[in-house]
Each structure stands twice: as structure tokens, then as C-alpha cells.
Length: 301
Image (cartoon, rainbow, N blue to C red; front, side, top):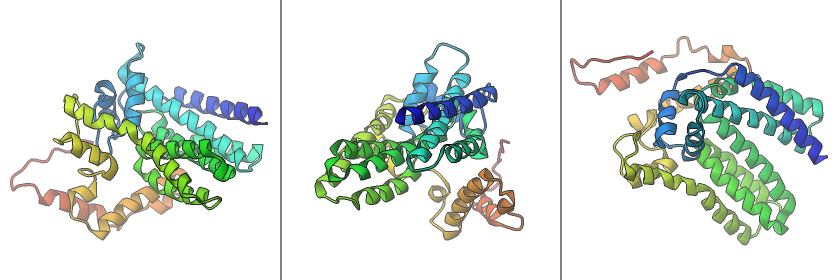
């Protein structure tokens, strides 16, 4: 049964991979793509949280002697996104969905705008999707094993550490899943074991202060090694909340942007109609207010 599920998941991943390969960007993509390509080429430190796990994988892809740097790292994104599609099929089946339901969910996930967009250019979200799905599988196994599952607890803790490094937003589901796991067989030794393995999963973050100390070609701002390491966990020195004093409207704006991405992914473009919403204009005024009089602003894009 498990072999059959694995074979079906592999088929889903292969189909998604073929789609992404057919539509793969040949060069530098939009958004953070250029910065991430430089990080891959130099084993550098991109914007906080630094994405050390992704950077290690991208550096390995960049070392493959075929095609351009951009094409190699873009292909890594396609591979990661395809693996995520296969894992979603496996997760759905393990949690009780039938073949048709799991296949439908995987297909919709594969062609959703948020995933397809980041599957064809240098981006970190394919790895984040994998980390979340692996976390779900590890939580299910650890909960099923209960107090007798030392190995399952260790794998869940390791997955939680890797998930945080893949993307900081996965800290929230990791904590919720940890509570769900511990509801069946709470014991302090399980908590300690999971915490220890989570620390192991977080250990790739140590490449960030190392590369800062080495003076890598790409470094985000002028940060000391310890400050750069702190950025991995706190995301300091980046984003609207780092550039401005804390304000509720900035928090709401960030959350609305995230919700908009989810809404467009399921086809609800009407939810993202922000006509008459003046938050972007106010945010722009806040950024411009710090510029000295007579300064020249160069806008790219």
C-alpha cells in the first residue's frame, strides 16, 4: 500500500516537474530572484532571514557545469516545487483522502498561481512548501507512535528545525503541530528530545555568521556575524516593520498582502481589489519622508 502511494506521488511530482520545466524562466526572474542568484553563486547571505538551507541547496545547483547560473538555480526551484506537489499527494493519502481527491488537490496545487510562479524562477517557497508537508507527515507519525516513538519524535524535531530555516512563517504551524503531537502521550522527555533535535535542524543557520565573517560577495547590509545570525531568527533589518516604527496599519498591510496571495491562488481576484485603499500611498509617503530635500529617487520597474 505504501509503495503504491509513493509511486503515485512520484507520478504527480513528475507531471508537475514536466510542466515547470516547459515553462522555466531561462534567465533572471522578478522580485528577489536576482539577489538569490547572487547568494547561490557566492554562498552569500540574502535579506533576512538569510535562508541558509535554501542557499546551501542553491549553491550545490549552481556548481553543476551545465547551462547558465540562472537556468541551474531556476531548475532547482522547479524540482523543489515538483517534489512539493508529490508530497501533497502523499500527505492527502496518508490523512485519509482517496486517489481522486488527492490527485485533484495535487493538480490544483501544481497549477496554482503562487506555486507555479515560484517554480520557474529562483525563489525559496518551493523548499518552504516541502518543509511544511514533511512537517505534517512527521507530526502524524510522532503522534501515532506516542511515548514509544523516540525515533518519530526526533524526526519531527528535526523537521521543525529545517522548516523554520526554510521560512520563518512555518514556526507557527510547527508549534501547533507539536502541541497536537504531545496531546497523545505528553512527557517532558519527549519535549526535551524534540527540542534537542530541533536545535540540530537549526544548525545550518551557522553558515550565516561564517559567511559574514569570511566577507562573502553578497551580504545583506553591514551586519556583524552575531547580528546576521540574530536576523535568521528575528528577521531584523528587513521589511516594512524594520524600516518604520511599529504601527498597526503596517501590520495590517503585510497581513492583507499575504491574504491576497492566497486569494489569487484560488482564483479570487476580486478579494484583491484595493481601489480606494490608501495604505500603499501612505506607506510610500513614510518611506519618502526620510529622504533629504532635493534627493533623487530612482525607481526600478
